[in-house]
Length: 239
Ligand SMILES: [Mg+2]
Image (tube, rainbow, N blue to C red; front, side):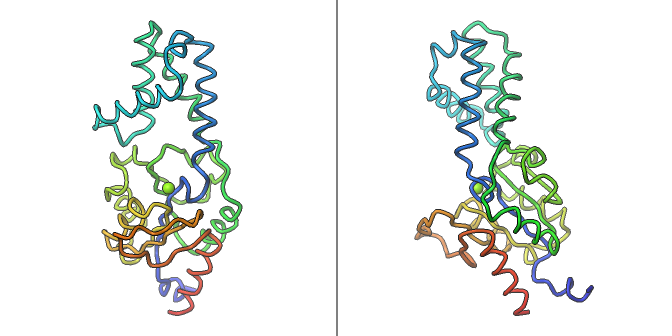
């Protein structure tokens, strides 16, 4: 048994969340719709002046003007709401309730069908760490308990492709980059970023997108976690 573990090619798998394990857009859209409906009740002067698109523009401008918090999407949303609430004569403390409501629905994600069985199987043989630029809280999603370690960009102060999330996961897993593998859907923020550190990187391409011409191809491209698992097993057998 010990020998088998020692011979595994990878001592740590790091895995992206949004659009890797669940579709991101439906969760965000639902959360924003619930938040907006709530604001219509408690802050009608704000919603009379700002439609959801105007609120999005306000957040984007804030990310440009406050680069020191741009990696922390929850902080961006909270500061944006405070500014808008104050501008329309409301208590800024309402922003905290608004953010809590948003996050409750933002964490209401629906993993792709291949995810739960694959993660359960992978967790039996590998250390698993989730690394996300987003603000999903894995403990509040259907994937709670499946990762040994879960990190967001807000936790480490920087978004991928910056190395912070990967380096923190490597420290947790106590493995060198060569013995770690990252799986993610973004060619730049996931695949190229992990490869920069010497990790192997797998591209999960659920939508059949073309790989960007200017990047070296990933180690392998998979369509779902079932294919990823299969590839890992083959790789293990080839040792
Ligand atoms: Mg992603």
